[in-house]
Length: 202
Image (cartoon, rainbow, N blue to C red; front, side, top):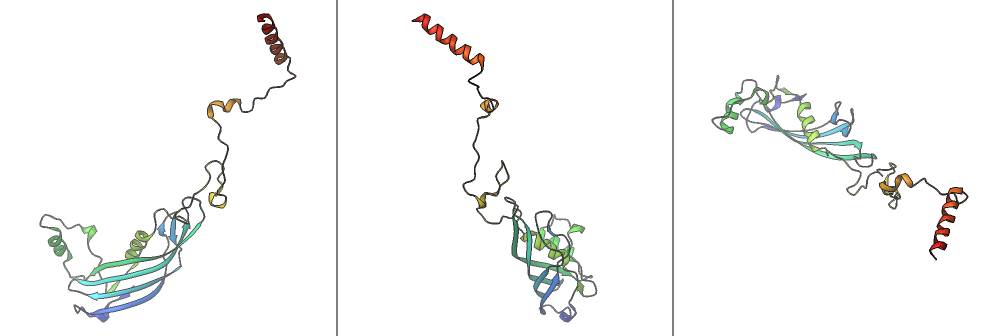
């Protein structure tokens, strides 16, 4: 929780906050990339008092870990997530302000209301979670030109750029294991027969 008592509801009052906090669970994209639970998140925030409440802005710095979507190698990413959220005073009518900003025909949605200060305190976790998830790559890669894995055997192509497999025409695949035995009497008879026909034609 963050305390705003020092601002005293004085519009224009400002306070800077630098804090290290542990990452909550499931901070990221499940099974793709995330900030490990308990990892340190560095917050650099600016709290500004306005008429409706307190405007919180700043950045969150963290290290995310995951897997390359192409070759499944571990991936680490340093990220800076931008944070900006208005926390309203409990007695402020933020719905009226939102309706006037959106237009006369807009209706206030209760689920879209600003988060509210409680005893001059606010919880940053929901805002932090949204900011970090938006800053994460949807498809992380170990490098931009990662060639991925061989679709035939699963080998990592970056380790062996010349890796390949002989391609066989599927139409001839059934004949691939077929071999002819020269001692087979059937082959000898066919060969002899062909020779006799040739002699007869001559």
